[in-house]
Amino acid sequence: WEEILNYVGGFLAVSVLTIGLVDWIAWGKPFGTVYQYVAFNLEHSRAYVVGPWYRYTLLILGIFIPPVSFLFVFGFLKTWRKLALLFWPTLVFIVFHS
Image (cartoon, rainbow, N blue to C red; front, side):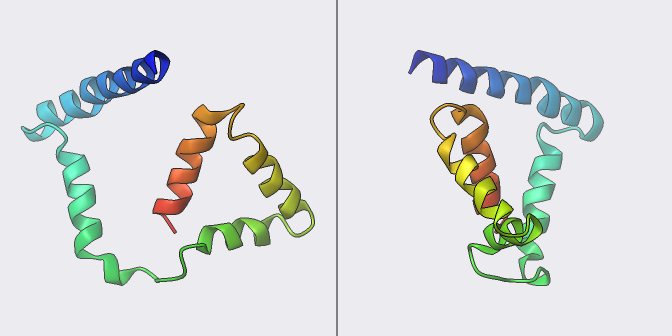
């Protein structure tokens, strides 16, 4: 748990120092661009094409043309323990953007 907390603390510190500080200087409030990004996407959520939750999974499978795509997905899923630091953010990105 200590290693995970170190990564999370490092991420938060870098986020505050980069995004928060730059936005505070440029826009007068910290995390202004993050707020605007979320507000815009919530307001315009109906403007995007709506598909099933597994949309990006199908896209990835289609782009890599079977059977190569199946090997790619199998390899990705197989690394979840060994490369967890890369696996989980990628999975969260795919899920949230689907």
